[in-house]
Length: 249
Image (cartoon, rainbow, N blue to C red; front, side, top):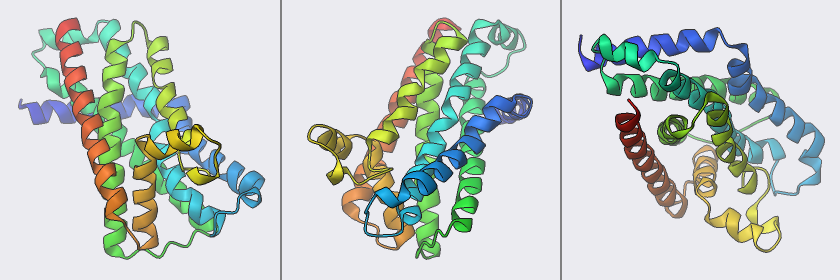
């Protein structure tokens, strides 16, 4: 079998594990929807963002949906590493890269399902983007690129952790980081210090790029930094994951 065939087998294996774990399904799909309902109905009227709050918050919540599924990925990767399954794969001559690639692709596809469900609920709540077909394709492209980058970084974190429990905790900063960006409120409404952090952290340009695509007004000032951050995160995650996997396997 080729490395591609091995990756497909690993992907199918990961999806079976996801389907049998209701907690991971809840975190990846339902939790972002719950957060959307909470912010729109409980806090939406408290923020003056110049547009309907559902239109402002949905791009940020799409990014949040990507982050909420990462804990399950980190735990699954670490379980493979610590419970002996990798040694079995070595005996079976399974491609090492296929094991990691399967986790990353499964994470990206899970993200797309979660975001599709989130956007569907957003439309029911009054979400009204003015994006063209190209705008939607651009938004999907940046989401896939972010999911790919975050997937590799999460795999690296999972491989580096000592146990599945600590692997799940290692992804918590990635889940919390969007709350300190422009996902929920504009950065210029934050206090000193936090405002600067929100403006210069990786997720803010990615969120603003999503907003631009969905509003039909993408800005190169947001798109270029977003792409640079995604590529940098993916490269760091891939090299870190590859190095850690080689050492531990």
